[in-house]
Amino acid sequence: MTGETDRLEAAESKLLFQEDALQQLSDALVAQQARIDKLEARLKALSEQVADQADSSDESPDQPPPHY
Image (cartoon, rainbow, N blue to C red):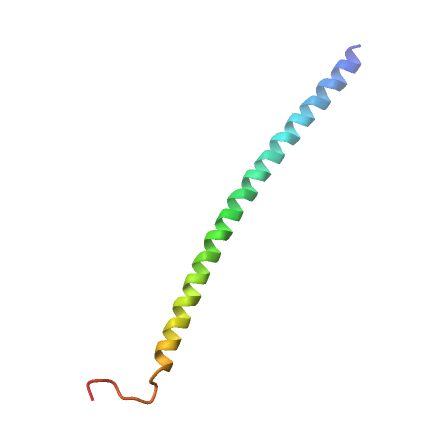
C-alpha cells in the first residue's frame, strides 16, 4: 500500500500547488483589472479636459487678445 499512498500524496501535493497557483493568478488578475479601471478613468478625464480646451480655443479664434 505504500505505492498507493505515495501516489495519493503526490496527487494531493500537485493539487495543492495548482490551487495556490490558481489563487495567485486570480489575485494578479484582480489587481490588473483595478489598474485598468483606474487608467481608463484617468484617460476619460484627460480626454474630456483636452476636448474642453479645444472647445474653448475654437470659440473665438479670429478675435485678438483682450490687451489689443
